[in-house]
Image: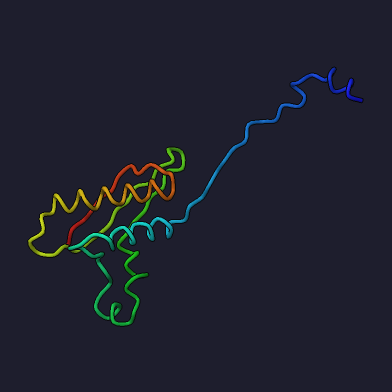
Length: 122
């Protein structure tokens, strides 16, 4: 029986290349961005309003200020977010801090490339 395997053409037993895929929902990216922003002082996400904040809908509703676009072909993600900044804080430096932290965290936790981080200060 072992002799039969020796005579077999190796092309007959070669397996096709495995394709790996993963889908990451937008809420996962939003959570990563939300957690990253919570570590940065002097800013907070734009929320729906005072009533939503008082009713405890602040954290989930804040996700509406975080917009995510995924490019499956390029294995990349782009982020657009709206934040409020305290008066007197230098916007260019704070923008660099926000962008760096978001890129670092998304790349670390998802393995995806971050193609852009667009920060809108309000």
